[in-house]
Length: 299
Ligand code: C5P
Image (cartoon, rainbow, N blue to C red; front, side, top):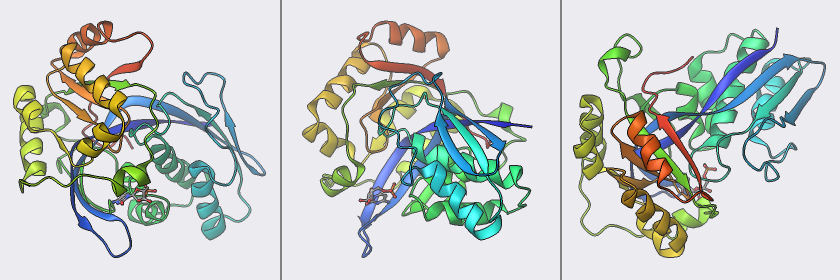
């Protein structure tokens, strides 16, 4: 039986850089939040490992390699090498999350692959083991393995659920809707971290502030407290990204922030209908989507 899984995008309601580490990475404190924009991955038993990009993909896929660099195949090879040397899988990816856009699509696909092959190959590995493997392949990947809203610290690998009562309390957290806007600029994550502009007056509690307002559904207060340490540097280096943020604000979004290391920006909206109205006012040539926060793990 083929296994079909949805692989979500993410935004960061807060992303604070604390300091630079001896290994060249940065210590972060971030509210990492998956949203309902999905790639779809289909996994089928097969003698060999292979990856195919589906023609159903809705964004240009020329930039996706199906070779050894691809995070889906790298995740699969880690599991194959360590736990299932004779297993294979035919993997099909339908891509809908913009590539290299700060929405974590590649990391999410990687995490979904760990979960899927753990099931397809009956490996029975714990989520903690999958998170540790995922950390070998990127800073955002463990958070996607955990799933749901998380507080992310360290390089990105120290995780705590933002709402520990999920999924029991799923209904008690008010929905949060966002509009995502991508102007097509390519921002290299490495470069963005290298050129980030330190805030002179750091405030210590971004995570707690956004977690508080998100959990109570206070969209206007949340809008005033969104924060991303990388934003200033990205807007300075990539003026088109700053322009897209301004357009999103002018279109009626309540608070606008750079997503991760960009180039996508997101804006908070009151509900889905408001999100669609905002989208309707944005330039037709720019990629955009309305999405809902996914607070609790999907698997
Ligand atoms: O880990 P990942 O491949 O997602 O990171 C891409 C680049 O972003 C790294 O090579 C590093 O330059 C930068 N980065 C960082 N600190 C982090 C995460 C990423 O400096 N916590």
